[in-house]
Length: 620
Image (tube, rainbow, N blue to C red):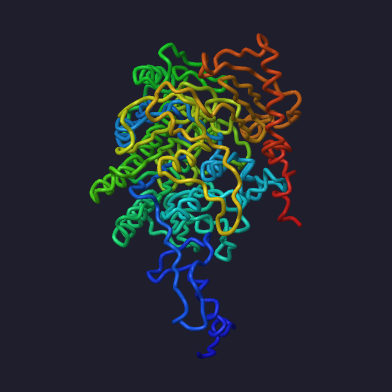
């Protein structure tokens, strides 16, 4: 035997350990599980030895392909699939052949939602109470923005179970310090279980000049709209995998930046809704709530909450205001329909290669409610943390540059707050407001031709993003591995929704859930919800003169109480009527906060004043 060195280790030494090491790789290059001890016989010679090959990891026979689609910053009342006035024919079709879940929830902002979705565990429990960004994280267990290895992602779980795994679009949970080509890469998508990734690591990016990553390196974009590029890449991943291994299932996590700012669409899409929203946001709300009742996604006796105090009645606006505001909404609507069309390309591809019938789709229309970051006037190029500018100055600039809305020149284009309220119909408030359904209540569609009998059915069971992973596993006939890469796995907090598939009237099994985003907070228990808004919030700090000096005393926050079983969109505060119930739920929030590492409570004022450790780390 030769003693040739390989990476400093002699080949003779490697040969002596090769038999045990073959548990890591088979002759055809397929990954193997390492959970079983070696079961062969190793003698002095081959004649008195017996070979053993550890069985290849394979998904259960007939296991479905799985596609998770997560859109960004879409309110409950935007998509036509849930009664909105923005046509989304692909989502409509998937919903009409699948199930609409009307009582599904997110975390109220992107990174916490994504961390909870990917892991099946609560946001603070996986260290994503805020973001993985330096300025929005802090050196506490619930806040450092670093998902632990013992809380494996859906991709790690499915890869261990015989799936190929692909992700495209927005990742959003890699710490800023790690997001260079020097790594480390353990918290990049490929370090969290994905075979391939194509997209961006941050919270938002320019759709024509994206901060683009492929696998473990930044690359130069090709100048097309990013949503077209990620869709091409997703289709190519599926095609190559099915050519190489036709019977092996795949998992695709399709998470476009749409419809997060910047709202940028190809020129051929920019004017498809010209004039459609000239009636304004008040008429929009009235039409949508009527549609939602007719569709059956809200109660027949539902009523709209009052127009938010910050939003002016449309009929009081000047002609120039109406022109500018309507243009922002035309572009936003085109953006949503455009991304629906990109999803349609994936659906059509699966149909063409005869895989659609065995593909399980989860479509989450928004990682939170509609965005409050577009200010009262709408924005083109100002970032969400840029500080205050007068409404007059902002509007004048938007009017002068109205032709740039939706174009590559609008590097941070976002619509005015009035349209965010409208597209959140029938709920109050917006993204970031973890105290309100307007921040946390998003549509869910489940589509699986082979497994769903009640085509077009409505499901009202309570759900949360942590439920998608256990639901996926139950659909696929899989269990959570006890170990991933030798690391013992922690338990999930999610509850599978599989029980509701064939039983529209089944009682909800997910009965308790907390919410917390930079001060705003809530606790849900058996249909009751206690919630507290917190000030100064994002609007106070960024838009309202003098409000940024409001003290951030959590003990002075006013808690409200709602019975969501009877009042799903929080119109009647019962705090004074049922003080004992409120006290009970406040106590439950405290217990939950300790259990899942919500404490210490960190708010937007802490971030703005750069008090948190993460924001100051670069100064040291």
